[in-house]
Image 1 (cartoon, rainbow, N blue to C red):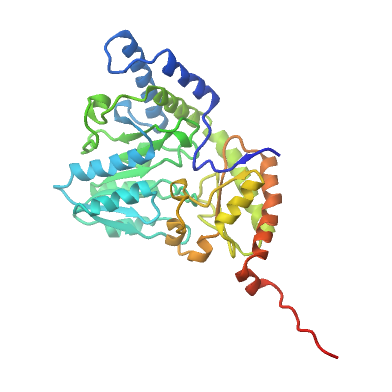
Image 2: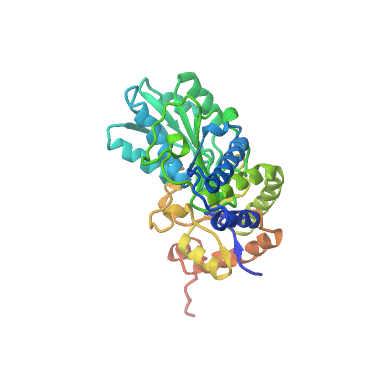
Length: 398
């Protein structure tokens, strides 16, 4: 068995067809899209064709798409742009405690600049309740920002329900859909969103590119200046090759959605059932049914997640304990803590996220080696030994 990659929520390999198409725009069609000569015009056409593909994939108009450097920039631009443009109307923002740090840290930044932010709790499955959103709304609320599905535990949020609520109240609604494109249907009208963030490298496109959907009529202010690119909404020379790659990735994600969901769900459920049947003292994190088709997240009691990841890596299996953006932190997942999981249990979390190249044979291999790894690590755990190992009887002298 060769190396096995089960960390697709962190990043994905670039599709071979996409990589090949991108090379042309780094070597042959290298012009600046803003140039008026033929080199520029040819490239500009490719950028606009990619914009059409992206828009079609999420049910939007091409004029509502802004290309960015990725999900983080899109989240920042959406939140700060709406807050800045609507600050005279209000200064209150609603989000949740389990958002990606691209959203949470942006909200913290705005709090330092006079805005008020409500961080909604989640239930034990990591789900935001629409009624909690409704209760948090005030006359000062200008923006609601809730992720479509959580990047760590895979729980899918009731976005359409929240979207209807936001529309009724005349409040802008931003959704981070970085983890859901290509895994579940994403349509901006059906979800009722005004702004939506997308990242290319989660859907077999290149890193360093993404987009932000902004519904026509949304009051929004750019956060970058210095050029007239993207209809003066995002300054800077367009990353043409990557934009072309994003367009192709979005097109493929939508075309293969049904097939991918069927395959990934089968592998996901096999992993969940196999782990549950063969390892004790564990808990599945995230909603059991309203979860992404490729996400498996467990907490293993009495084990440090870092040791588990290193042991799996030695067996050729790449996984994670949560978001790649916080993998260097010693703190337990803020998502798991928000779900009411203790620090000790949260430290023993493992996230396996599947992709289109994973096979049933690879899943079987994980299910073969994981119980052995867990047992070995627990034998070295004083806490496990204290609580669950049979006590040795004292010798009796005759």
